Length: 409
Image (tube, rainbow, N blue to C red):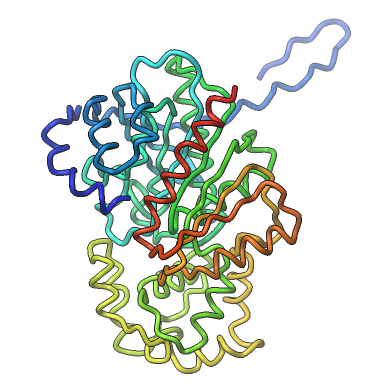
């Protein structure tokens, strides 16, 4: 979606309005009930960035081929930069994201959280609005309070290496932003209902299901998912490992380097990169992942041959059932279907010709969840769809589905 929307970003600039204890004792002392613990406020700050006129949003729906959504685009949208509290390595940190709100909306709003795909450049974080326009902002004009997390490692938390495909931190980045949005609504007399929609593609598909899993398995969050739509996420990380270990070329080596660096950091292994990669790649990778280098440059700088990319001992250990157990345990832990069956209505989307996230990865995830007892789960195959071309068919299906559930009060 982002690639297509970039076409209109240039003229969007010209039309946006950017805003820049004591106790009381009687003769007979009575026990008093302890004060309830105040509910944590996850919202730190909300700063208005821009207003998007309804006319522009309708034109964007036309250009993107979403007629199902155009008729519902009825409001101007206010876009806010949100700073909120979340957790990284069990420590409280500040994270950032967008909140998009339909202006002058009457009635109660559902919340929709939209999760973007893999970013290598800091400038692509959603809070670099409008340059990094994601398209999820369109949902706000259709009557959703829409939030779009940067993720940990981007925006205000850019000094942290992004915990890529780490289930815990992926989930909390979404959930805590939703909680911050609820706080914003309460403080600003925005009426919400109890509906929560989750949607994302590529890494965003994985993050969507990670958030859904955390919400459904941890009632303490006080949230309920109305529906979740997840496209082409690497849900089955153990399956991805099996594919990479077959010696077949992989066209996106950037993803492999990203996930290994992520786990090496978030789990504090602190192993030298030469443990994982051969030279010259081991020495090049830190500079390639500097937040400025493009995905294309990273992929061209590495090799598509896993045998040439990885340290031979490391690669052999990946194939050995008793080798690299720490890494394999992390992959199992972060595989979506581990110890969970989705309860909320859920759809998984996958293109049959996707060479970045393999079709079988999503299909196997669906099959295992169904075998484990999932009752409200649907798999939607997109014939001939590649990683980029499957986005639009997915959203053409998602828009009316969410609409029907949104209006079913």
